[in-house]
Image (cartoon, rainbow, N blue to C red):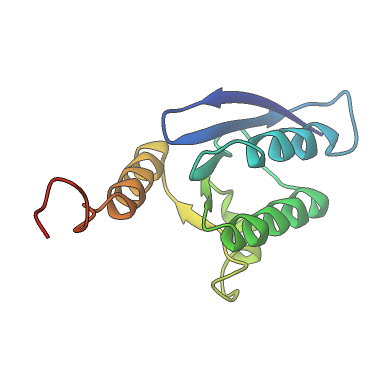
Length: 130
């Protein structure tokens, strides 16, 4: 039901979902999320702007990966979530909830903020006298 285009970003992994009428399951999404989760990137961005609807299986996959990535200190960020599917991702506990943003630009800013926050200067490094 979904086709997935993958793109490696400096601080994230972008998955762009599009409709695919040739298959009835979410195998491509499963493989793409698995590969992206094996990367060392701080976030996986999923762009849903080309998708009008999400199957229950796709929603369950996204929620499972949001939980797993959170446990690893990383984020699943969903962009352009279809209006009728948004309620599946809201009102969950913090460990299960992916970040929903309106656009890829917002997702990129979130990643940059997260990376910048995690790379605060080490006060015990050689640049500072002890």
